[in-house]
Length: 146
Image (cartoon, helix red, strand yellow):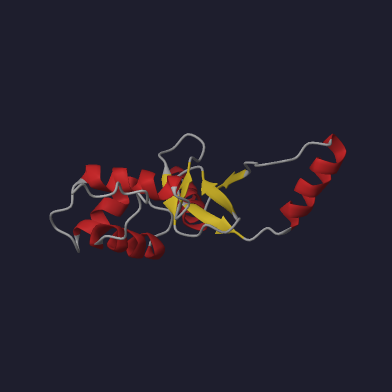
């Protein structure tokens, strides 16, 4: 007797569960960063398995795949609408709670008569840690001239 084809490609597995748990603890990791975290718990997992499952989970809407400007793809366990800010020095990506953007989307829809189905807003700047490093480097440079 032939088994029915699996119509749900996203079956919960131990590997996927651990990936989701580690993704929820991490701050927008790359696939390689997530691999390092998961490998501490599942020693035999391969990087290819991480990539395949991340793509599947993103396509299924279980996680978000972030393609932030000029850097590696990052992944986010939080799927509710929210925005991100990326440090232009170290690449750190963090969430920003910006509900006011919804008003901008509604205004754009009214102004253009488009049915807006998506948008992409990325904020960039320097994170506090990089600001401190730059400030300290500047102070060190000033001291060397004295």
